[in-house]
Amino acid sequence: MKHIIILGDGMADWPVESLGNKTLMQYANTPYMDMLAKRGCCGMLKTVQDGFHPGSEVANSSILGYDQNEVYEGRGPLEAASIGVDLAPDDMAIRCNIITLEDGKIITHNGGNLQTDDAAVLIDYLNEHLATDRVKFYCGVQYRHLLVIKGGNKHVVCQPPHDHPGEAWRPLLVTAATDAPKDNELTAQETADLLNDLILRSQDLLARHPYNVEKAERGERQANSIWPWAGGYRPHMVPLTKTFPQIKRGAVITAVDLIRGIGTLAGLRVIDVPGATGLADTNYEGKAEAAIKALETDDFVYVHVEASDEAGHDGDLELKLKTIEYLDNRIVKPIYEAVKDQQVAIAVLPDHPTPVAHRTHTNEPIPFLIYAPGTEADDVETFDEEACKKGYYGLLEKDEFIKAFMKI
Ligand SMILES: [Zn+2]
Image 1 (tube, rainbow, N blue to C red):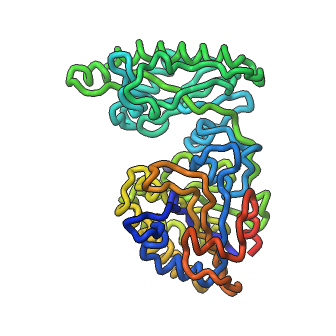
Image 2 (cartoon, rainbow, N blue to C red):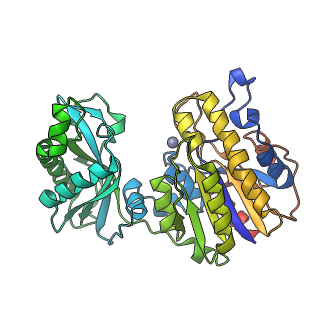
Image 3 (tube, rainbow, N blue to C red):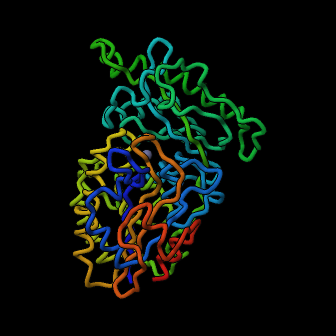
């Protein structure tokens, strides 16, 4: 039996009054997911372990069976894996935005829509002037880059720049965590000092770079400061091929860096799909096609579709309904139709709710369905947050979902 997980990021939601107190998954027209729920078995899964925030990196790696207490290292190391930076055991990897400052304040976390081509030039320039045996910058995508500090201590308190638009930046500089252990060459205080020194020097350098000089002349937003946050060490993730020997070769399909990173560290190959954007305009057909093709050569495929989460963050009810229906008829349908006569088990689930009324993630358990040809069905007839509570699997947590799925 081969296995495919189809993940609708942030798809779960709360009952909405204007939908007659139905959730979006209940209201949306999703004949294929409902059919698979009806023919398969359902349940609920706690994807956010106690003590962790309901981030997509937490929820997606939990779905794959990883215990957050063992593997959680935050975004930095996952993004390093995503862009192909192999971390040494004493490396601290930290996300490094290039942001816009004006009049002593953070104006945007995205460097005024900085594009990757321009960012690559700025990252080269920063390396030329700031890189040492200990410090190196790596270019990621648009404003999202990476800084690796050899011997850096991850126990520093950084402020995500997207949480502080319009605020003065100086009070938001990096500090050492209280009671930080010395688990690497540098102390937390030395690491914080180093990061702050890099921030200040990057501001001097970037202000003089022709890219920003031209932006200033045109009265446009400059990309004039680095802003590091979310640092960590290389996570100890056992590849899925080891945990589940029936997986000889697996693949992940996603537009999101963090999920690419998780997939890479889980031992999956990353399949890039042109036009995969992470938004409702993503190339659904391309992703479905890539998944079907991957199932010809691989035993395990993880297809991640971000669009519902973004619609949830925007608080856009109509758009989120559409993204759920798109997932059904542009991902689940073509994949099911292509593999229905083969030995392929299909699971569909969100990673966490992103309720449109709340506009950010919550940590409630999410509904899942597992379908495989020839298995017995439970009594659940539709795929949604309420119906799945009565499913055969009940409420699962930790690695119980992936183990149950891989057992088929
Ligand atoms: Zn989100």
